[in-house]
Image (tube, rainbow, N blue to C red):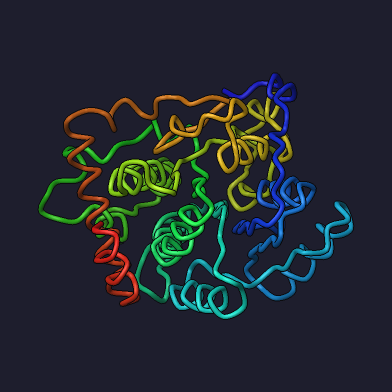
Length: 332
């Protein structure tokens, strides 16, 4: 459980001169606070994302006002839509010089309602995992080119949660006769009980798996470091649609979103000692690298991780043919 001790954790500081940073979900909460921290370190360009033009305008104005940093833009990105992800990448390729030093995948949802997106996926699965994975695949070339050109690794950090260790994708619920993501998408498995007790946790486990598997599929010494990061339990708007007072005890020791965002900064540009190799495929929590869910390191967990990777890559490749080109180029 989170404590008030993290108030002692410092914000990692680095000179971000010349760098391009993307933060998804930057209009409220952790994403907004992380974007402010980046802005104070003066990168070349800070690109935030929000679900609408109005939210983008508000976030952009707030970040500029509070940090005095003007090289920030916010672009619409609706993660319930693969088309929106593709349009965002098109805009990045059209309106930037192609440099990308940090991609921080922060945006996410919590809902107890079973809702299918227009793309046919359960909304939590698509927003918290599939759309972020698609964005990652499509921006991999930019991340890798940047790291290789500069001689120092770029960074892809994916926000997860400690609650990922409360679920697994073991054979008791996920036999091989159906894909894991297919089952998560299904109405039959997405009962109200499962949506309440499991779904957000399952999406966070998908985040940990994706980060580890992507790193493992990149070449040793790759100019890209991928990790997942747990900000801890924070007082944020993430739980606004599900809070019926059940978090009252946790809130007594919860972190603020600013405190939680310090973990995101650590994952995105740390660690403080300058050594970056330990961050490859790592799970970052409470200002250090931790072991994720013990199940994921078991024989079954390793087999399931490969299933999740294969399914995710297939879905992304079907959505955008550019993913196929990335797979071939990088031998994923």
